Image (cartoon, rainbow, N blue to C red; front, top):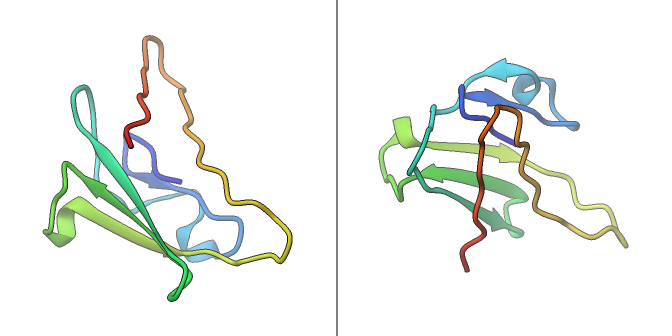
Length: 85
């Protein structure tokens, strides 16, 4: 998961857990999440950026029988999220 202040969280890799490593984002930014099952990675992209400063990639672990579910942490007052397909 990534947060608006650039923080990242991962339950499988301490390198990607509770550290500020990603891009920041705010109102009217669009964060795209792309799952790559062949490389077991998740890429977060700000406003469809192709630049390294606007993307962040982390690994994930596939657990047989478990569903992958997207989630959003709405921490700050008046925070909004919209799911776009």
